[in-house]
Amino acid sequence: MDIRTDIPLKSYTTMKLGGPARFMGEAQTPQDIATIYHNARPKNLPIFILGGGSNLIVRDEGYPGIVVRNLIKGFTVIEDTPQYTTFEIGAGENWDETVKRTVELHLTGIEALSAIPGTVGAAPVQNIGAYGQEVADSLISLQAYDSQEDRFVVLQNIDCGFSYRHSIFRGEAEGRYVITSVQLKLWKANPTPPFYKALEEYFALYSITLFTPEAIRDAVIQIRKDKLPDPTLQPNTGSFFKNAIIEKWQLEDLKPTYEDIPFYDLGNGTYKIPTGWLIERAGLKGKLLHGMRVHDKNCLVLINEAATGYSDLAAARDEIIATVRDTFRIMIEQEPLEIQ
Ligand SMILES: Cc1cc2nc3c(=O)[nH]c(=O)nc-3n(C[C@H](O)[C@H](O)[C@H](O)COP(=O)(O)OP(=O)(O)OC[C@H]3O[C@@H](n4cnc5c(N)ncnc54)[C@H](O)[C@@H]3O)c2cc1C
Image (cartoon, rainbow, N blue to C red):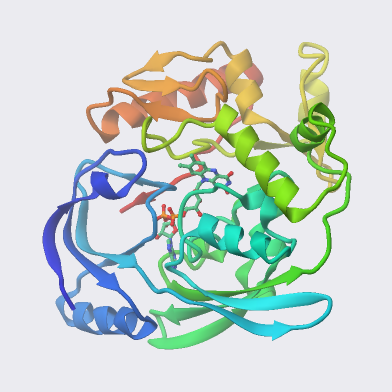
C-alpha cells in the first residue's frame, strides 16, 4: 500500500484550512484498514480516518500520524421483500450518490438526506440528519474494525448510541472503530405527511401533492441550493454549530423578551432552538469575523473567506459563542470534529 508523506490536509477538507498530515494512506478494502493499524502500532503512530473532509476542522499543526482515506466501495442488496430492501454499502461510497441510487429504486428512508456531502462511513458518526430524517432511522447495523480489540465487529443500531448529531463514534468510542460498511433498510412506500416545515412550504408553493421519494429528494436539493453555500466555491462545513437544546425554564425565561423565539418540543422536557436564529438575533448575520463570514442566508454556516489559519477560525467561533451566551445565556457548540 502506498503511504505518502507531508500531505496538505486543507486540500482534503471542505473548510480548506490547516496543516499537513505526516503520512497519508488509502484503504480500498477492510483488510487494508487492519494492515495500516498493524504497521502503525509498533511505531506508535496515531491514525485518523478521513472521509470527504466535510465535517472536519484541521489545526495549523496538522496531524502527526497517518491519515487514512476510506475508499472502500460496495452497494449490495442483502434482502428484498415486497415491503423493503436491505443494502450493505461500503463506507467509502459517496453519501449523496447512495441516496440517489436508492431514490431511483423508489425507496424511502434517506431521501431527505439528499445533497449532504461526504461518505457513507461518516454518516453514522454524527448521525447525519436533515428535513426530518436521520441516518439512525434506517440503519440496521454496521461493520467496523475495532482498533482496540484488533478484530472486525458488527454493531447493531442500538449499540451505536445514536441521538441528535451524536453517536458513540464521536462520544465514548471516538477513534476506536473504523466503519467499513453499513446496512440500511429502506421501504417500498411513499413518505407520508406531515413533513418538515420547509418541505411543506415548498410543496405548497409548487402545488406538489404526490409525495414520492423522488419529489422529496428534488425539493430538498432545491431548498439546500438556496440556503447553503457550495463548499467547492465558498469553503465551509455546512452547519458550524449544533442547534441548541435547552430546558423548559430557560425557554420560559427567554419568552417575555423574545416573543417570537422559535422552538421545537423534544417531548422530554427539553426544547430545540435553531442556533441560526440565535446568531442572527445576536446581530451577527453576514458579519466578517477574523476572515470567517457568517452566511447571510443561514447563520449556522461559517464561510472561510480569508482566514489565514485555524487560529482565525477559532477566534471567530469563540466570538460567536460568547455573543450568543451574553445575549441569551445559552451555550452553543461547534458541530464539526477537529482532527488531533
Ligand atoms: C455544505 C454542507 C452541508 C452539510 N449538511 C449537513 C446536513 O444537512 N446534515 C448533517 O448531519 N451534516 C451535514 N454536513 C456535514 C457533513 O457533510 C456530514 O457530517 C458528513 O457525514 C461528513 O462526511 P465526511 O465523509 O466528509 O466525513 P469527514 O469530515 O471526513 O469525517 C468526519 C468524522 O467522521 C470520522 N469518520 C469518517 N469516516 C469514518 C469511518 N469510515 N469510520 C469511522 N469514523 C469515520 C472522521 O474521523 C471524523 O471524525 C454538511 C457539510 C457541508 C460542507
